[in-house]
Length: 268
Figure 1: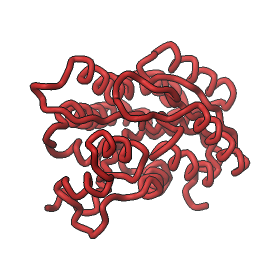
Figure 2: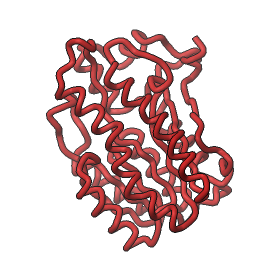
Figure 3: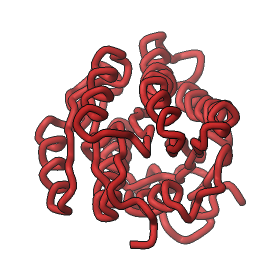
Figure 4: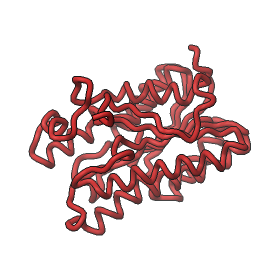
């Protein structure tokens, strides 16, 4: 291990499956203790299936196989009380928080003038407000420690526009604004803040969105602008590898910037 992460503590939202799960396992492999937050139930919006309590439980079991601690929390990032309890318990039991991966997020399709207020509010509240609610509970601990890394999971859509995705795009661009603003505020405390911008990722969300459209995941990928490299998507483990790097000592001077993992999509 050359990352300098062994013995540290990470909070991961949206941890039960997809990108969050891959990041939890990758960090655990580096010797990081994990607090895994996930709503772990179905919501009215989005319409595709979300993670389950069984997935959150199995993640905890998988993480502990790396001889580190995993604290699973069934918590909606929009619920400040649940978030606050999870963060406080993490600090009480593990002593500190060194990494926050703000990953909880949803997606959905709809023309701007046809979106419901329910869809708009759910998207912005989970993807953007949720990231702030979690961070504001974590940041004081990082300030006290005088160290920490916050990684906000945005998207290539946080750096471009997208048809039928205006609410999603707005939330992901908003994460860039939070990243840059927090980086300015927290630099005096030796806390770094970065956003990461993957292209399409091979996750249950990807599958769920395709099903809602009556298409296969590959057809959805081909309908988009397309990656420059000859792949339809990247894997959750690719995102996890990037997060491990960004959280590590190797990235100690990276803050306020956007890490693009797009297989060349934005170059088209």
